[in-house]
Length: 484
Image 1 (cartoon, rainbow, N blue to C red):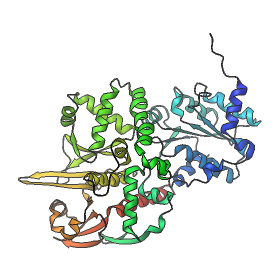
Image 2 (tube, rainbow, N blue to C red):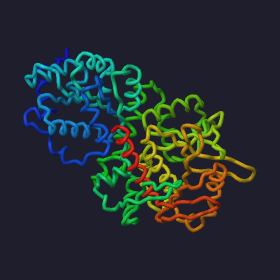
Image 3 (cartoon, helix red, strand yellow):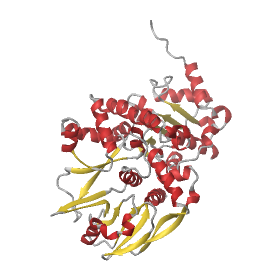
Image 4 (cartoon, helix red, strand yellow):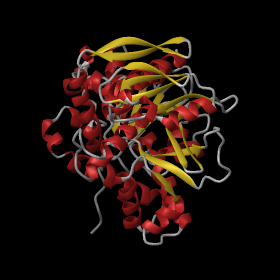
């Protein structure tokens, strides 16, 4: 029995349901009452800018708020005076639309609104990866309709990035929306009253940092952020917080590992990939080697392990961090490297939420702080590790100059107050600073703040939660300044 195709009237009805501002002139208040992500201030100018003939590709992991950000953009366009009959939202994954060419969908929108002219339209395609060869369709649309602004979003970050780079050169502008930073977590929950500006004398300059009115309460939220705070939907839902694993694992991890990556890269052994990711998540922040990963995975070939790691990084689930020695020299062969989850909540989804005294808090605090730095696409973090006789040293994070590859700063991440009282035990950090002529370094704590001079090095101590907030806050500020 032949399937009866959808009629144009059915498609029109569905489009009217998705675009209720055609009738009401406004976006549903379920979206407008939601707090905007801070990244909106970076995203919206790209949407507004009609002087450049480029489509905006809004990509990012699942459940980080891409669709909500699109509705916020539509609301801002309406408030700026754009006609509601010149804005279209089309969810490509909807069975009504997912096999229809983009141009056909756009023409139906024109018919639905009674508009003949295309100039001045804003068209949003949500979850565009569900349309085969979407990048070819979208590039054609950009060329065919020079006075229409097209925005496409998708959760299969790896697929979108690959296709965008291959086919969208000169026609697409990529925008990555990451999981929530701790700064955004504080912003969305309106907890700014906990934060106060301060300064730290850093290398002779007064540098912006942040203090708090209540470190105990801030640490409670930092723990919640580590356990489930990467995703806007969970931080507002006590029901989801009771069992974050159901939400994060099924909606985020499983769909990427079982559907997105296999379909994009033709991965045959999904169980093998899943097992590797689970092992990495459990040991986030640890040093790995291809040899050790091959052995621990039951003999999977090292080249296969390497490909899996590349896939997981492309999917924005993990980040590889490379190693230098105590002289800040790179190794000729990257045999050892650290792997971090891009958001610590991914670990809690696979295992159990952490308590503040859990033995895994140290690595997860380190993972959380790395997650803040990963939002700086102009910055590459490093870690230092070396062996000199019986002395083995390590520094958790090092910032290197892009000009001469010399260390500019060093950071030791601790979930402990011990070293505030016994700073002389920070032998690795002090050795690294002395070798590389660094006059100051930063050490995180649980709740201690202060500065101590040790061996011609000024050690600044700051609670981990405040340091994470500071990095996220300054990252957004710098990105807005760069784009300003």
